[in-house]
Image 1 (tube, rainbow, N blue to C red):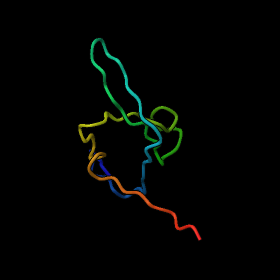
Image 2: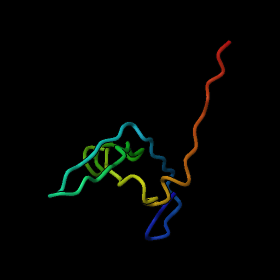
Image 3: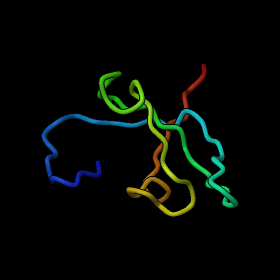
Length: 71
């Protein structure tokens, strides 16, 4: 977990649920849509956007995923 304050006591996870591109004047800005485990009281009702491709908060370098076992 990335924390500016260094407070790591709270359980926390984020999930990438989508992606998109914002347009600011003449620049395209790719972003991830992230769901925050802290609920709807945080950010945009529990979702936020992180810029893609520049390892914002380590999100591009520190991904993990699971593959379900299907019997």
